Length: 320
Length: 265
Image (cartoon, rainbow over all chains, first blue to last red; front, top):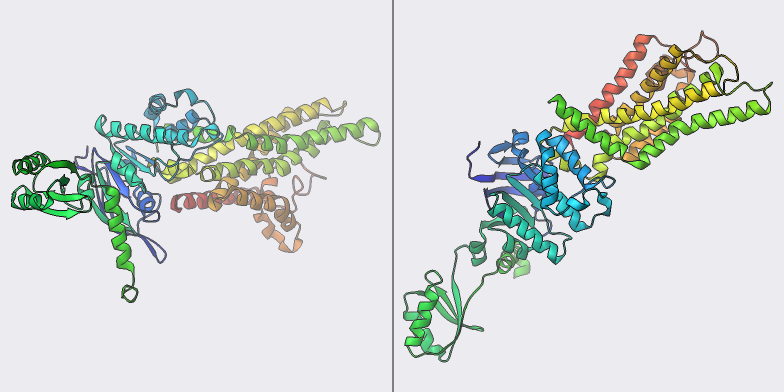
């Protein structure tokens, strides 16, 4: 068994369609046992990298490893324990849900047949399994797609825009299922999405891709904070000038500055220092009416990055 | 590949085909209806004027009805089934889901062939059963085909339609579109090959036409017993007929497998 700690690793992965470069030297590292979000706007290359990893289309350059196996050289072994939904899940509409799973089970191998019923039960389709897929809602097809992935007893699930077409309840249910797969079953889940909120709520680690390049990757909290895990507070006090003086003199504070929302404080340490900051201000006789940790949003960070890239692409004469 | 897996994959492909009601119904209609209509038409003719019109059944009826099934409408039914088997996964959008299992694409292609043949031969056997019933039921006391001829006729029907079915699997896998493959193959079968085989200036090169090679194996003769069998327009040796028939199968299977292996899924 492969002991590699990475479920997916690509080095310099490039894919060209004629003159157009869809993937431009992608270096991607997806750790095992985590939910990994692959974020990017539409057309950024998210589906292309999935299709390349799965051998649906050949790479133009670079190397790929999936579950420790080089692809495409050991593609069969690499994909043996991989389940994937590429774009929307598609099925033979004239067959039932169970028959569609039987077809994939026949291709995967005999032991896979024993996983059909548990997979249907897992996604809540056991009672509708004998209905034709053409009668299924989009949400049910998504769930059947996940059941099809589970037939592989996957170590790695690759899901392309998995919450497309799901209602809010379906999205919540789906998120819980993904978390359970990661936390309780130790599977790796790779989710490509343009929905930042979804990735932030579901994933532990993420990469942001734009125009075929990885812009940044790391833990969600680090990405949201802009590379390092910064802890910030917003303070409202009855004497802002004195408070700024106290904060500037405090070794627990890296930076304190007035902002529209109040005093914005960048802490030098972990969140417990917030209580110490509060105590220092109160001891100095300053009334604290609000002390609120700043929640960094991945969305803000994503928009910053893509806006910066857009600006970089503006020709110099236009900037002038 | 493990034969058990190959068998299961072929079984899964057969499931896809046999559950597709439109394909099965149209194939049955194309194979059975012309034979049934032939018996109805000839039966009415014979009963209205027995002196002028021979019975619908018997040897004569067999010689008329068998080519209708084996060489004309049966191949059309085989094309319906073969094109569905060849392009069905692509049309449904599930080909990529089968590819991501890691299974070889050539194995995925190969599973289509026995599945298509299985359904094709079931349909043809049903149509041949209708033909046999008609031959005996409407013989009106005239001689009927013996058991050997009936069995040879069945084998020939399965052979003639089976080759067309396999070619259709390969061609539709190559083209990647069932409507396009269906149109092209029906056009070839009904129009182009009929025209080409009647252009005498083409001479012996007409032996390369599949229907001419297949007709060589027909157990019945049309007209006297000295000309080509089953209404063929050119004569050829059995070896040539075998080579031409195999050539069509090998070329289209190779093209279908190559396209399935190399295409973006």
